[in-house]
Image 1 (spheres, rainbow, N blue to C red):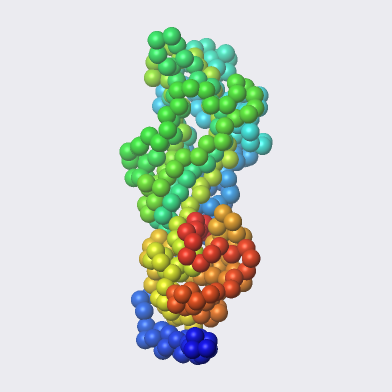
Image 2: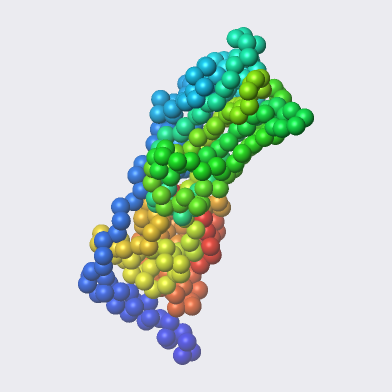
Length: 316
């Protein structure tokens, strides 16, 4: 009986206290992330760059040998099909076909992505389709396909992967779906990726490389309901939700999606950051439910909602 009497007044009383504290003021929050870029530009959680209209204008192609063996379209490379498993066109380069048409030619070519930022994120990965056929000699490996990253807008490169073996079926499906972790570069702006296809030996006469559907996935890992990404769900989150609903400034730990910004987890559809009951909106009810959770009381949520406090990957 004493427990039920305590529960009845606690929510309105604490809510009133929170509103009074909220009006006192908190530091301003950082701006939410910018809108997603167009399909021809690599951007966090944007659509894949699919090369349907060729190499995008802001994806530079470098010919270090100056001999003409470069990244281009499937038709431009002389290959018959996109062997990566993607639809339509792909970024493609073929030492084999170029040599058939022009004689033995040295090659060293780079395909650079546009510059992109991971400044708002704690984790990231680049995913793409590939088909790379490698030529191996008895005593050494001939050619390589390297994926490299620059954290200095193109000044200096670090190798993420270096292939000197086949990936995918020779001039046929399937290709290979590739995922490479970029988390060590989370929080950084002005990043560039490059696919570097080259043969460091003389007498180059190798096969081909293709990539398609390059896509950048970026997220923040935080307990579900942690509105300021502090690492815990507590009464401070309830306060900040109330301030947000009153259109007052709030502070967050970074990286963190702004309250109200559309996010999704691997198990939920898009919903506003701070919508802890998955109702579709951030309101005072979310603040009160956050407060109940922090007090150790039960909280109701929609069926598809992750449990409050459960670690979640938030994509935005």
